[in-house]
Image 1 (tube, chains in turn blue, cyan):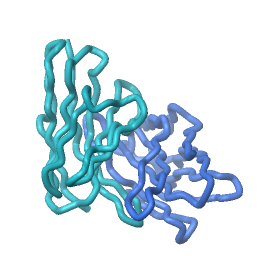
Image 2 (spheres, rainbow over the protein chains, first blue to last red; image 1 turned 120 degrees about the horizontal axis):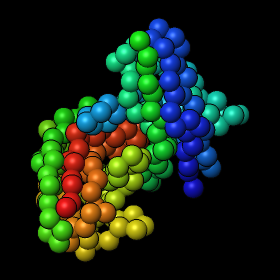
Image 3 (cartoon, rainbow over the protein chains, first blue to last red; image 1 turned 180 degrees about the vertical axis):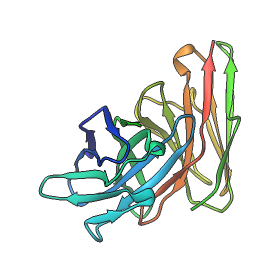
Length: 116
Length: 114
């Protein structure tokens, strides 16, 4: 069965410095992987997704993630943090249904704080 | 991506009552999903709702507690029955499916049970 582990429950960075949010996954085959962001009192927004195309995936708001099969990792990065990036981030793996969409397995989330 | 709305956005309910949450999508979708997010926690799938068939529930969730309707391809409801304080959570619907597996989420319904 698929699973997702987010290695940090909380990450704090200064504005303008790089962001690294770590995610490891477990899957018996090549999975679909996602990063979602949840701002306070807001719904979930898709940041980016990996679906077996290019291993380096670019998303919205300057975020990107690299799929590394040998390390079973899908870490999220951004070169320069902005105050508006402060939010909860979820790494997600999809468990495929045959012929249909997938059941999503969520990591426990990483809270990103950005200091001025 | 689909535009998804949920009603109500939040509610405060008394113990023992029920709350029905509506999820409306601006386009026809095959699969709709209902998730629960308990305070300070991640999201857990409650059930998958396909139009024209019974919902499929995940382990730990039962139809008597979380009945779901899916009358057409743009609408679904989730009822949380016999409320207890432990049901205080955010409930989110999502839509998606297909080969890309991408799901898009509604804004959520914040339920507080007193």
